[in-house]
Image (cartoon, rainbow, N blue to C red; front, side, top):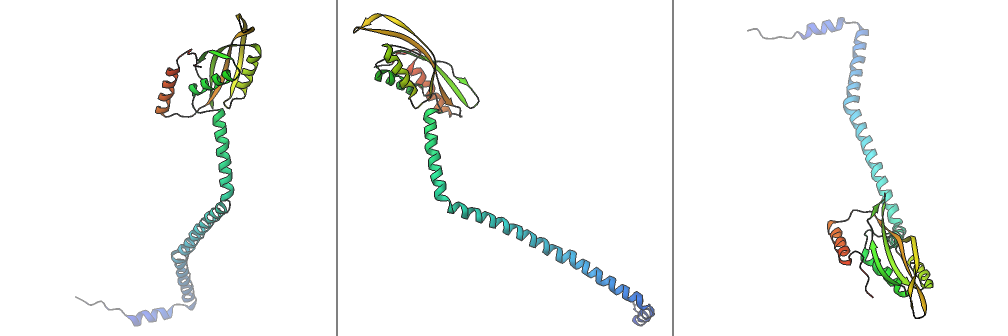
Length: 221
């Protein structure tokens, strides 16, 4: 088996015979290849890493600036939040999230007592759903002097919960009590409910309250 021998002298002679221009071009090409490899495998990854770090730094700085701004404005935000909560509570009194018929009946009966008008009948009607709220119609019957009827409607208007009287009728009572002619009247009114998903327990409690009051039940004095 022959040994592999490299003739370095012969190779050197062949290289020496190559023209100088080719040697120069080869050297330039080799340097260009080196710089291209250096650029793609060393510089580009470093540039990309630097760009990502700058982007992360800018995002963190922006979040930090926002947090500092929130911290500096915290008293203002707390005050605005408290005002919004107060406004929300006022709105919920005018437009509650449940029908709350028992409380509605108590309020109307209370106005009747204050204005010396006797409420003889109260009947809620089926709810009519709208886009963001529901209408709860109801009818009531009452008996009392003419001026007291006016005081009664004025008292209904001043209640916290919104109640809109849509129609009413009055007829003279044949019986004269204490020398005064009383009127028998009936009116149809509407109150409103803010539409919101109600838990099952709340719906059951609401139905239970409605059954307890009963259809057409006369409020106790």
